[in-house]
Length: 241
Image (cartoon, rainbow, N blue to C red; front, side, top):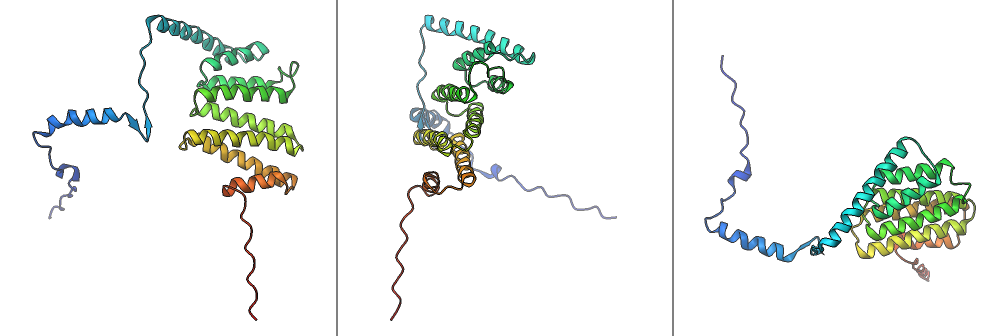
């Protein structure tokens, strides 16, 4: 009985590429130096690393040790489901030091929805203060999932609290659209910001459909969708004689 033909494995084309000449090794450091000299990626120039003095480094280490102890305490409190004004203030302090901690943002949402803060402030005031904390976080970094997720969650709460007040709801969304516009002028590749802008536009459309209005809110959505005011309709051509 004849044996089946052996399977032919196609040759990897990378193996057929020409090998570097002997002189290419000497040219490699020069090419690397040229790339390092450009110090740019995607059109964004990298910043030089600044060496801090010993006193400043020790100060930063002390801050890190204090923050680590605070974060550890908050994680224990969250696991114990401890919701109070004190723990809420502790999360504020921790997030001002390091806003890129998703677990602390989540713990903050749990405290806000637990109802323990209703005795000291009204819900709308709490969420407006939350927006101010988020603004501070976005000044430090604009590309962190947990910050944008918490801002989206806060905007939705404020939007719901506005109820039938169309003007108040539109004001909330206008702030978000203006924020996204400013951030996209700085970096148009920030997809976190594009996603947030799309969500704000979706809420604006819901506002129009819910209120059935065709006034300022509808005009604002129309301008945002096409990038500016609608062009006037062309006049109809006169009928042929």
